[in-house]
Image (tube, rainbow over all chains, first blue to last red; front, side):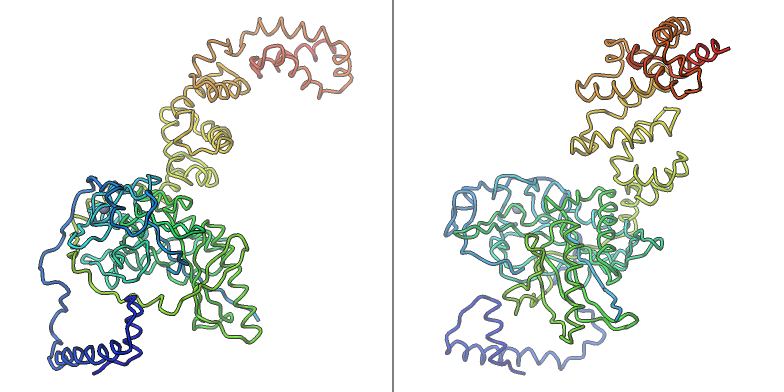
Length: 97
Length: 477
Ligand SMILES: [Zn+2]
């Protein structure tokens, strides 16, 4: 199992990564190798095994509906590349979600 | 050709919890921007979300209120997408195992009640808010992490009007459970829609489009009507429907195709490694059942049965649970249920409408109304006086007792007192008396009016009419 160049470009776009031509080639190769390696798992018979999505066997880690202090706005905005003292500022975007 | 419209709705309701879904930040609406955030809801590395128990309880309530099945074990997943108001780069949601599924609500239609199925109800977190301005986009992350329930209907809705009714009914049910305000202006209820059309009688579904950006129930109805019309026009012209997302533009009243859509639906869900599953028990669900408030349908039938009110009256009184609560508080220990109904429907709802307020902001408390109507019931004041007193109560905030005493508004029921007064009035209007005796008996109304004017509406109607008739008719002989 390997991965196509188009799939790599698609994944890069979803991750907002811009890749150079060399990187596209490199990742196509590397991701393909990883997928081939993982492919080995398909040789196992897992018909009677419950899928495991978590390594912990605990459930219901819950908290009461109580307030805790938030950060100060000054602190929250401190690391932002751009803000106006109240809001984060980002380049103009068109709502797509 | 006859076309059938097929609609499914996705409704998001914001839960009324004190703290966010996975952290202790406040959820207060309208707070200063970016004042209610912390490392968890900002998605800082190393911060760990912990689920708010009340979110689970609210989801169970929503499930019970909508005849849904409750999934005993459910978990969270990450929905990945990049957007500036989503600092983590993913939304914590539920994917393969929503906490509620296979439910329904009943909506009123002209052909009676209709069941609209619910595919699922799942827990998730809200994103922040973006404001688009001339020189950039401003981001407020206060809303980030506020708990939501997403309620997804089956494609059972057959017209834009039915969609409107579904939304008002769902809102009523959810508001009754107390888990959300469902206020579309404040964004605590949002709705996206899917619509397709097919020739009447056809079994397979047509290609659907998704509609977003509607900001009122009427907006949803209008957007759906617009889109149904557009699709039918396309198909009749032999053009295929393109599967796409459209944004409703309230200004132009058109649905416009969303730009940059190529990758919008590739969310790459995977199980959220930072959270463990929720495992419900019968006892847990039983505890929620025990504190579930009465729902609209139950309350409606109880109002009809218990209070002997008509269905129409009961529908008005139970439309919002706050109005129903008001009625039940006011009618407590009061003899005349129909009088109370009449005054709440007529006067109290009028006041609310005039003042554009909700019933919990009503200046007349249920007890204050009952006190006023007790005067009326005991014939201590006339209906006309009661209205004057009510207006005064609204204006001054004073009690009925005080206003009636201060202004001397008790009705005149003394026959002697009224007798003298009426004789005087009859004597002062010989012309009208003559006409009355010649057969113009509708002049009785004129005399009643004169008596009411002289007494500022305080004369007891029955006694007044009786005495008046005696004077007018007796001398006729
Ligand atoms: Zn937080």
